[in-house]
Image (tube, rainbow, N blue to C red; front, side, top):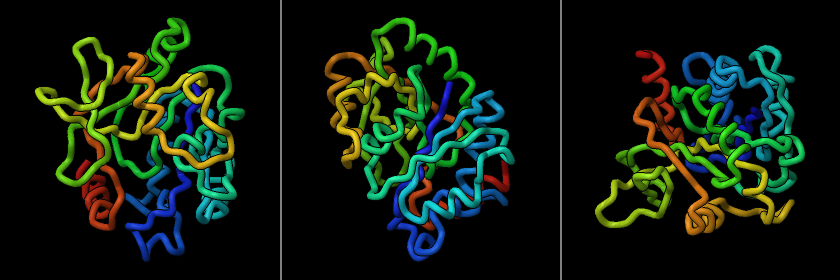
Amino acid sequence: MRAMILAAGRGERMRPLTDTTPKPLLEVGGLPLIGWHLRRLAAAGIREVVINHAWLGRQIETTLGDGSNWGVNIQYSPEPIPLETAGGISQALPLLGDAPFLVVNGDVYTDYPFAQLQPLAQQLAETGGACAHLVLVPKPDYKTGFDLALQSDGKLLPHADGLQPLTFGGMALYTPAFFAEVPRGQPGPLLPWFLAGMAEGRITGECYTGQWLDVGTVERLEAARAACRVS
């Protein structure tokens, strides 16, 4: 299984830190934030990694190199203009192959065990039913995106009354077919494709209750550093 780390964001809420340093390279526990993903992917046996970048992307390539220092092989998907999440993944599809792949947001800090997604990726490849599997987390005490919910059969749907509201944790398995109709080279968000897939009953999910933090502000960067010190 291959993995993609999304690292193209400008990090507006992290300014002025991100004026000179791309958010995925901000230091957490002696490593760049993205380095925790690389280390954990390698430990899970996931060696082939694609990283997209736009803002200060040359720094990312210079710092991470070919990935050999992290136990992985990195290929880069540079974006002349930021393509947002769906657009960025669509642009990188030629590097991700024909099998289901993992995508991880570069600005989350988590101890999620990536190895447990390997058999799920195999199931996606063999069954031809679901086209994506999302890792959700309980809603944190700060503003997040669109609320989701899990049905008893493991399928996802938009949150509704009577169901536990959950947040997309920025980690998911996708089949290449999920992005078949996403325009290549054009900016585009993921949410419309999520909604379409959920309406067809083709997106499954799970709720992870372990360590997870969206490192989207300076305050949460400090929280990630504190979590790293005690883990």
